Image (cartoon, rainbow, N blue to C red; front, side):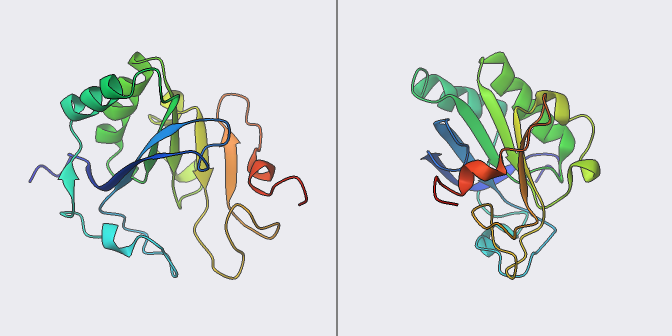
Amino acid sequence: MDRQTLRFTAEQIVWQEVPGEVSLAFLCSGCPLRCEGCHSTDAWRAAAGSELTEDYLKGRLKRYRGLITCVLFMGGEWLPDALRRMLEVVQEAGLKSCLYTGLEREELSDGLLPYLTFLKTGRWRPELGGLDSAATNQRFIRIHSGENLTHLFRGANA
């Protein structure tokens, strides 16, 4: 197995993870963070799932052309070169991109940020809740402007 090849355990079209976007989401396997209360422990194993190759991603983008506006990677930052290449493919297709990570922005490889439209940062801490909690430590930001969009997950009555 190539240590620089991203793998994923789930692929789906999602509407809520990136507000205002219809996203093709990949749950990448091999996460080293192992946050307490993680809902994706099945993706912790690096060898789990299928390879996410450029050809596979290009095929999926072709299939969903005109239907999706964004590609979301849930993880993968632990292989920054491989993830950057996937982000380049997304950018070449004219789509927005998002990374969900438990790391803080400052901990990410600088090589990823220019290819991202959105970024969700912060380890999952059960006592603080997720993006929909006013107490959360997590942040959802628009990269190029630095705008914090976390409030969009809390609904109109928050």
